[in-house]
Image 1 (cartoon, rainbow, N blue to C red):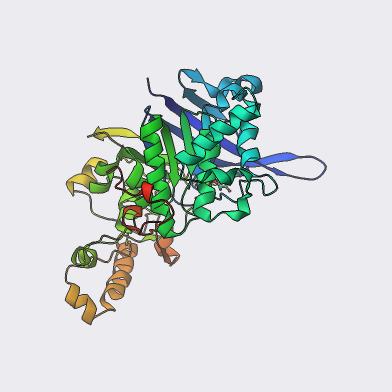
Image 2 (image 1 turned 60 degrees about the vertical axis):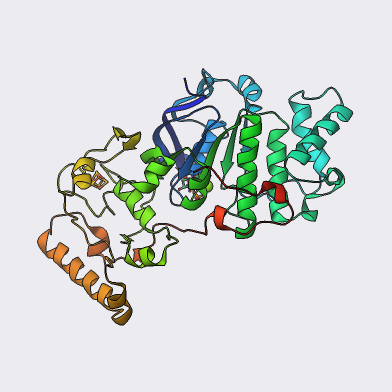
Length: 413
Ligand SMILES: Nc1ncnc2c1ncn2[C@@H]1O[C@H](COP(=O)(O)OP(=O)(O)OP(=O)(O)O)[C@@H](O)[C@H]1O
Ligand code: SF4
Ligand SMILES: [Mg+2]
C-alpha cells in the first residue's frame, strides 16, 4: 500500500448569498474527483494553471478544508473520516511548507519560539532545553547558523526564511511534507538551493513529498511522478521523465510546448501550442471533458458530453482523454486552430515574422467554416490566445547561492 492515497477526493466550496436567509446558490468545484498515490520516500509533483485546485488539494489532505467526498488514506487510515482530536495526532506526521515564508512566520516571535511552539503542542522534547538542542540540530541541517535561534523572521533573506519554514516542519519529525509552491516566491538564483536542500533532506530523513507548483521546470527537477491538474481533476499522470519526453493529454502537450528548451536550434523549430480562451470558472465547469472548450483536438462526439476517466495507457501513463490512442497514432486531425506556430524553417521565420499570424487567421477561419457545429468558443469569440504556462530557468541551471554551498548539486532526473 502507498503511504498516501487519495481516492475520488472532492472539495466543493459552497457559494452563499443573502443577508437574512443565507442560501447556497452554487458551488466552486475546486477539487472534483482526484485519485492518486504517493509512495513512501518519493516525490509526487502536482502542476497546473492558477486556480485549478492544487492548494485546495494539499489543504484537504491535512484537513485544513472540509473534504466533501472521497478518501485521504494515510498509512492505512482514512483521514477524511477522523474527528478533530484524532486528526490532531496525525497532523504531526503530515506537514506543510508554504509559498510565502514571511507571511507564514509570526513576525513577533523569534525563531526558537516559532519552532518550539509546534514541538510543545505535540509533546516533542521533555523540556525547553531539550527542544533547543533539537532545534539547533535541525537548523544546522537546513543550513542556518545556531545564532538564528534568537533572531526574528525579518532579519533573514527570502531563501533563509524558506529554510526556517522547512525547519519548522522538520522539528515535528513528519513522514510527509506538502510543499506548496516552495520556491516560487524566491529569486531564481536561490530556487536551486532550496530545491536541492529538499532533495538532500528527503534522502537523509526518508521523507515523502507532495510538491505543488505551477512551474513545470521546478517539478521535473524533484519529482518521481507528476500529476497534471486542470479544473479540479487530474488529466495526466506519469513518471517524471516519461511525461516530459512524451506528454499524451492535449493539455499537457500545450503546457510542455511552452517550456523553453536549452538548444537554440530546437527552440526555434519546436511547435508551440497556444490555447485559446481562458480557464473556465470552477464554479461553472464545462460538461463532459472539462478541457473541451480549449482542446485543439476536440471532437463532435463524446468530448462535450462524457467525462473521460483517468485511464492507464501503458508505461505508467494515466490519461483522461477519450481520444488518446488516436491522437498518439496521428490519425486524429486537430479540429481547432490553436495558434500553433509550426516553425520548421528558422530562417524563413526570421525574414517573414508575419507568416505565423497570417496562417493562424486562415486556420481560424477554415475551422469555423468547416465545422460550424463544433463548440469552439475561443475561436468564435476571437478570444486572445493565452500562454498555457509560465517557465523560469530550471533550478539545476540557476547559479549557486554562496550562503550555502553544501546544497549545491544535481537533482533527481
Ligand atoms: N476557501 C475557499 N472558499 C471558496 N473558494 C475557494 C476557497 N479556496 C479556494 N477557492 C477557490 O477554489 C479554486 C481553486 O483554488 P486553489 O487555491 O486551490 O488553486 P491553485 O491551483 O492553488 O491556484 P494558484 O496556482 O493560484 O495557487 C479557485 O477558484 C479558488 O478561488
Ligand atoms: S476528451 Fe476530447 S476535449 Fe478532452 S482532451 Fe480528449 S480530445 Fe480533447
Ligand atoms: Mg495555490
